[in-house]
Image 1 (cartoon, rainbow, N blue to C red):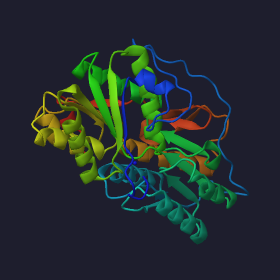
Image 2: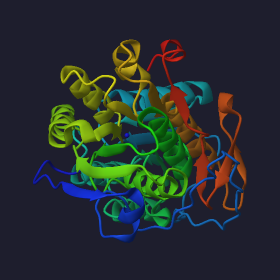
Image 3: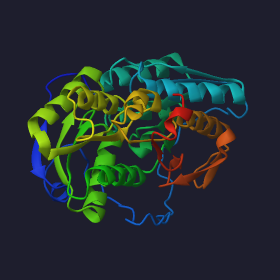
Length: 369
């Protein structure tokens, strides 16, 4: 849900609406085009796009053969990527003859991630699964893997498309953006002020969500006010401290905090709880249900937006197997993913897991991850 060495903390403090932020230099989002969904939830039309992924050089025939795969997530030791690893293990057991090993740093550090991938290219693997800490910085080592004939599939956080074959997208960015902003607006009102706690300003999926949130909020909730976006490095203590700083800095003006990671959201909820602000500062964000159950149960958090990361890891493993077997090829419109059924190909070289899910007090107890 996450990236860089903990160095100088850069915080951007703007008192501006999301709409204004889109036209002004700011930190936290990217500069890619946006596609905000309709305010009334009308489904977006899926547009065909040519395959834009990479191609491994002189890859051997791997159809039906045993596969040795390494999974290099943003970091290890957090519930989210423990869940994706669990899904990969489930898929590997179902498929048979697939060995998937997860290896990563305990911090979301792009340099560590690059080094790990480079080492596995040298030691020899058939496939690499990854969740990028930085979409551009990771590209050269992934291209090196492709040049070595290794199948490369991303999930959770993309790289530049030409540095991997496929990317398993947990939910389209504009869908996540709509769900987060709609749920926040329902809690803080159409003119409420809010801030964002993210991991770093270069983490690709979070930057994309924030930019799509900006576009959707400007279109559908134009009176809401964005106060600030702060970095918290996928660190629990820093996330708590950043949320606490926002609470103290803005006082009663702050009506809500959006957590962009599975670390930031529960930490922000803890900060609101300890500050005695439950009911006056809403927490909406991306997180795993187990981490949020205490806050949802206490009534301090009403909406947790995510997808099932176990399913995400499961889908990524099936996509890599289909890619290695030649069953998923450029130009295909769907891929079979075990118990998940057929998953659609979107945006040229992305596999869509599905729409985001909202965990709340009524349903969160039925999930365990």
